[in-house]
Length: 189
Image (cartoon, rainbow, N blue to C red; front, side, top):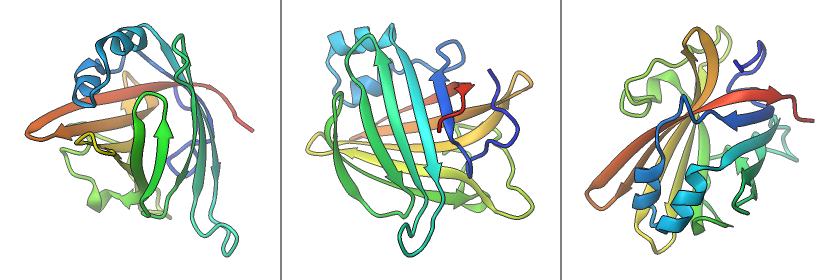
């Protein structure tokens, strides 16, 4: 289902389900991230749902926007809960599939979005009052050698607005890319 009016990178609260028919195959990405073959097989048949609640910055208590994400993977038992604090500071976390990793996230304006970041796609333009068009998430496997940059943005696909993540993963000289496209399911409160 298309993203409803009022959702944007500045208001992404909602429940989102990965559209396997519109998304790229994640197999090469997971290989670069050292995910074992059997887990890659399970995940290839799994459904993925993100329940996101975005909280705007409210200094001094909350100096940066926070997006709380509950990720549910069925089947698989790879569920996780993360908070993305959009301040550009590096934090470490442990995620069931990836183990220990470092992560940072920040809003970016259109001027900082490259064609490579969005894999040649066209993303939604900024509003007249705010130039932020995307969230840039940078993750790195601790002691595993891979790095992934994911750009979160909205794109029109087949006439419908969709929330997308454009992921570029590198490990040594290897580089793989995948676009993840999400269906809007419901509001999250």
